[in-house]
Length: 588
Image 1: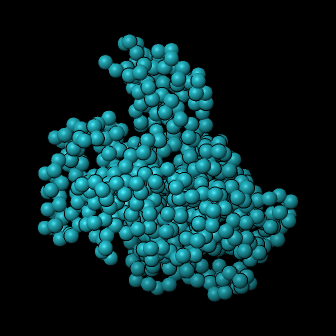
Image 2 (image 1 turned 45 degrees about the vertical axis):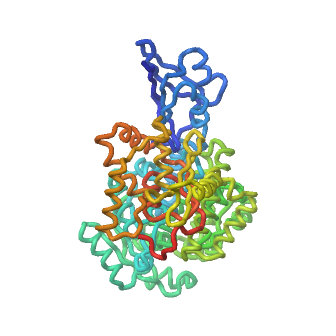
């Protein structure tokens, strides 16, 4: 009978949902020879850590143990050790320093601070990818720590509602994401005070959004465009500018002003509120909390370059803050939009709050402490470099599908060249392309004379591939092969019976009137779940799906909507070559 053990302290990173912490040792409990034992093994010493446990017969070659949610046996202890060293960020340190910085700034502002929350409030997977160990929801946890001292306002630009702007990492529109943010905060015990539609203009979609929230009990304010914004400072900081906006009632000393994306009107809302507070005789201040770029890291650090890559479509460029350098003689990194608008913002702040309370530089406005929680610069640099490559592939696909321009693609390619990065530095790229080539010469593979490949890297570094066929997309095949590997099942085993696949194909053809019978990933996962009741192997494989979160996959062709949606739900980081997998212009 196998001996079992489990981690008492869950390891963090991509392998589980717990926040990352900087630790040197982990306690494990082993049931060996009918007695429970606890042992500490080192994360930093390959020779005296896990390997030592094996040599001392504390871990046996057939002993099973977990790292996060991934099972290993004793022979795989060094693989586990390597995985467990992949964290480069300390969430607890970050939470402590960040909450202290915000409270200190609020105290300096007379205990009424309007804090602009830039970036993503929740599910910040960009930060999690480039700072291994970063909890995507760490900002929500930060707000939980401060919840007795904060009110929350969410801003959304009316134009984003009209254009149905989409948040790329979730595939949902900004108006829907606003509702999701409200729900996420409510789940954490944080109530959103109100929603502000900025630069409001009468439009059916905008009014429908306002009606939805109002009828569900959420207070919505409408702030119209200000004529001459942002150059006409005298008008802006007057009763005809900010004064014309309806005042938003708040009661707490810190007001978090956030939004579903950039250019949501967060700063204007903050300064409008500060104007109204001053008119009421209340001393109030304004500050910015943005994760990227990281002001305390070098200008050309891959983490900051990754920010440029992520915002290449809107043309953000990292720069040394000249105002900070001139005032303090210190180099600090900011981005072009903040630096360009700073003289105007500073004049507005000085007019509202007084010259003595105005900031001296854009960096002074910020309260970001993320750079001080990096614990392993080498790991972070490597992760950020991979993110730049991911962004390049994304923009290439966006270009051929019409949603990005060539200038954006070129901009990210230049960033890669400056860091000596290549497409093939992403480990899954070549195996995916090779799988596509092999599909062309393998009987039964390919579909409608298109040959596609997929490659996925498992947590231990193993590369698993898949090929398309008349029955399945390459992504579907690859995920099936991956969970077979994780479950220890033979590759030739059929997890989904041919009858189920045939039934789904008939349904698609006869009911949905679809021309494409091959199963996309979301369809394959449904077929797999249907197979579970009568198939113990399928049940075991389904349990392994959660272990794919945070893994990397590359496809040789642009994914179908069902493939992209399925990979997103599994939490797998996707890239693809900018090649179409069908002659059809419309893909259902």
